[in-house]
Image (cartoon, rainbow, N blue to C red):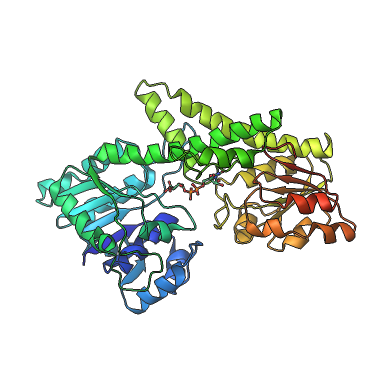
Length: 450
Ligand code: UGA
């Protein structure tokens, strides 16, 4: 059992990390500056939607295996390892904003009093580890040793615990054998498949690849992973665009493409583009890092450019369906979060689309199963509902932005018999085209000429 502190413990990554390490049997003190969130977590409620998190959190709280606090010292004083999982948003020039990480390091300088491994979970630029080490170096003169390690996370929002307990790999970057040993001990229960609470996704027979490397390689692996995922999405969006022009069917193309084991079928779903707090931010940071090191990242710039164009193409389809003036037209956007299965609306392309439509005078109604409250907090004028029927009734155009299974079950026939016949735009290939055709609704499916 290791005493672990987590800084930034109420955000997606910090919370999943805190709960998961506690479930592995470690004693976790999780710190966040957001007091309302800390209070919520202490009462067993999660401020973010993560599948299966609340029951595990409740059990760990009852057994006193996890504590949430807004006092960083409490999370650091007895900890052998302190995980930093604070946000690093993009600055206007594409660089990652390191100010929260630096603030944490400055507080740590006054707080660590024995050998401590500082583990960076946040995706930070390469120089960051040196910056943190420099801030903490004063400790060495006081006889307190430390190591700064990179342990990137590959968790997807909404299914973070599933990804934590069945990881495709664990990567630990440090040339310090002492620090590597601490991290190996922390991950040992996961590698052995042992947990202290009921976790449905843990598989004791799985072999989890465990990669030890240097700090820079660990960090670049994380950037490379997100850049690769973003590239696949822009790639398939571009193929979808070409397919549409020449009369192909993108669903069949993805099937045929994905059957090649060298390619595989995941991350090849076309849509409005990649949103969310990670892919775009990390790609921009990687482009900036390349530029700062006199390297021309032409391919990644193209990936970002396609992503921007993709949003415009969806906008053009709406304008194409309604004519040049959107004034007073009612448009239903199905899917407000940046993807399905999350309540996160940060960097959601649906929200960007909403703003563009609103600015052109359209009356927009948004639908989401999880993110209505968050969308309204971000955009107080947005009419948002989790009632699908209410969203689509009376709309001139219905635009599907997230691939929710329930969207395939919309009863178009009864909608038409109640006197409504919206134009349907499906950017995610989920609508039931046979039902649309049978009810006489005009529709467009991205990537196909249906
Ligand atoms: C992403 C990575 O998938 C995680 O491995 C990584 O740990 C995380 O970023 C991070 O850096 O923290 P996440 O941001 O939760 O995870 O979102 P994804 O599930 O990757 O989806 C990103 C965007 O791509 C969404 O807008 C989604 O709708 C879109 N997408 C995804 C597609 O358009 N097509 C696809 O086939 C897949």
